[in-house]
Image (cartoon, rainbow, N blue to C red):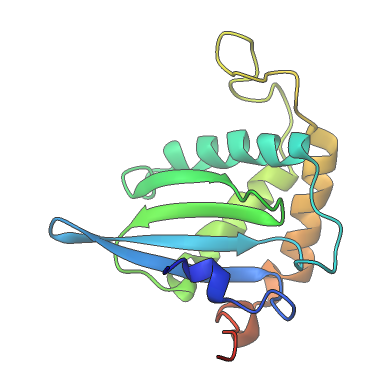
Length: 161
């Protein structure tokens, strides 16, 4: 079984931006990023309403971005509720996306107005959102991690065999 994330030592994994996997599709590469907002098994996980709100805002940010819209394949929550996944076209590294991820989290931390696609006809669980806590979580991630990324926030700690 080759599930990359299961080989990561979650006991020492820090918050950050990690290359989770790279997949070859036809003549190109898709890079999956682990955007880890919480330290696994050491911090409280995010509420599903917060994860859902981040998903809506992150998708809106990337799908409407002039440079990244065409490169964005997917954004969505991790089942463990400690972060988000983003899949982009290209053979990319954490440094390649650090600036745009920070811009995205800045956008989410300052968002005001009506949450995109938060109506019953547009979302399968439209009542499960929390914009105010989302803004707090995103600002904390920007201030404590994205504004001062280090090597240990961008390279997975592998489990020893």
